[in-house]
Amino acid sequence: MTESKLDIDTGLISRSTRNIPLRRIQDVTVNSTAIERLLGYGSIQIDNASEEGGKVTLSKIDSPRLYADMLLKQMGLLDR
Image (cartoon, rainbow, N blue to C red; front, side):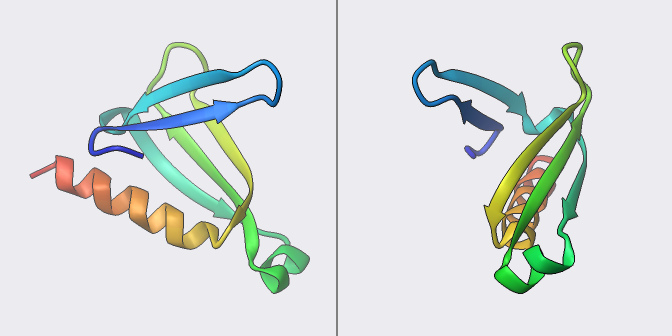
């Protein structure tokens, strides 16, 4: 995450990077099953106003609530 965008890298051999401007993010949702909560991980679903698919899910994130809060805080700084 930078001050203005979220970069999502995927792939092991073939790499792909998706850049989502923080201004386009509309909602951030944290999902965890009971077992994931016990183990301290989960997923973060990001809804954005994008033409190429509005939802991105980051799976198996350690302490997902912490990262979601960081993302929301950075989004709030842009609104100033």
